Image 1 (cartoon, one colour):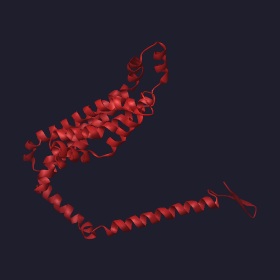
Image 2 (image 1 turned 90 degrees about the vertical axis):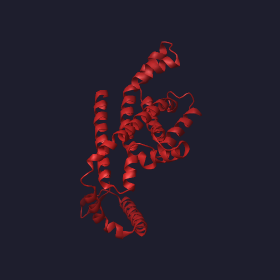
Image 3 (image 1 turned 30 degrees about the vertical axis):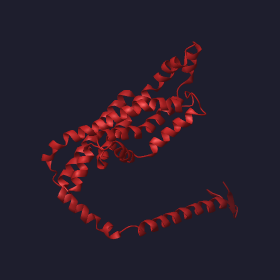
Image 4 (image 1 turned 120 degrees about the vertical axis):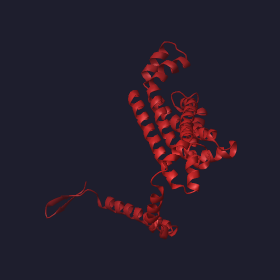
Length: 271
């Protein structure tokens, strides 16, 4: 750090003059970008509705309370469908993610030049598109219903599970693999006895974590026709049945809290 002398008094400075100038230029650039972005957002915003939002929210709250408790009898099957969508989608994704992960990991891929790039492309492409978009595409292909929701959740989860799993594979202890290789074991025996036991805890944690996420995602797939409790929510919103909407939101919240508790207990048991 530079030191300046003023009347034989040495003063410490955090940055040089050039560094300070560069620092302030960064701040000015950030402020300019923020001001420009705010100008664009402001021009595209109807501020009358924004200022009127508290009154609208209060009116909706008044209409939505108390919840219509008698409607709870019609939510049993939809919430069960939602749980099935999340569970089946997670299982399918895990089955498909395992070979993709082994193909993507540097230490297990059969070919770093051809197979690994394809596996990485699958991981990136499935993770980059939201489950709602997948659901819309699948509904157009196979029609609305629970099956479209299951496939949408599965496709969306493949990249997530495969990415975390192939990273766990690359971080294994190679000494165990080398010890098994020294015995003359085949490639499949090395994988079964040297790699799989090391990644099983990570695999179990990934499975539970992704299932917890899929519970949340599956609750809204019904908004686009992919089944589950989101379908009931969409129907109630369309007819402005606010007491039913508030009850459905409470049921979704309860399902998410229970899934979070279950996943936390399972992860705690695994770790």
